[in-house]
Image (cartoon, rainbow, N blue to C red; front, side):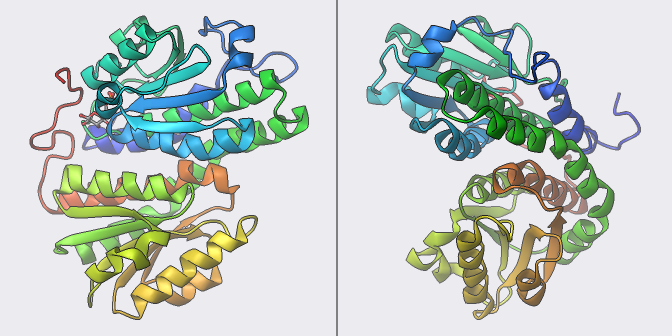
Length: 370
Ligand code: BG6
């Protein structure tokens, strides 16, 4: 059942491209417009939505955090991300025009389930993004957008993450469509980029593993890692840090790269490994330059720089000790590729340390207690 791979995690990371592709399947009508057939909220209700609150835990919450950047940009409505266990206990502001989006791979996470119950009691509509047909979270929601990543067995979530981003992007573009927030052409352009991503992820899986394995061998004894990113690279940094702590039991911290000078740089010492998610060179150039200057800052303090960056980025080539390359893609699409080398890196580190990558200590695949 591991299909020739020596762990489920290995198998599931290699299913990242298929997870994105399958999640996009069957969502378009003959005009190429988005149709969300499992969604039982009528178009009128969708049109009236003026705020989205994502509730989720762990990896699913980082998928939501990525989607916030895209949906706010596309739909021009505020998107808040809230850890499900915090949400319910702080009297959140919910109205019938608020769409609560519950993201969960298993569909059974109790914290997320309780958050969605609370939202529905307050009169808000809930849409679930879920990987498990008929689980409690989709059953209790007003609408469901299934991620078709296929069953995920390894405890640390991998292919579900890229599928969750894909589904949340589809939701964003659908909202942009029904609300008339974007031109049809712009929506189709974004969809084309999205449909192109499985191929780009596959390129990473085909070309980067040797570099990643070598980096893991070199860093296997490191006591701690910092992960830094900006814009959509920020939640990717958080997810990369989470993967490494979950399965390799290494102390990691993820930060917004702009925050470096406001604290985390104090942690940087000779040889400290720092992972940077570097945005594409084109488009959001301002951000690119800012992340590069962050790299210079920590490099000057002797840090060991690992970068995830666009193929051929000359600034990265100059400063980074190791680079995991990504093929060129739009900034908003980059998380779908950038998380992949970080998943592989965490897995390689854990294997080198002799740990069971599928069943990390102290963790369960779905946490059904609050
Ligand atoms: C944690 C799992 O307990 O729950 C994580 O170990 C997961 O991998 C998180 O991201 C949320 O789970 P789910 O099923 O709600 O996405």
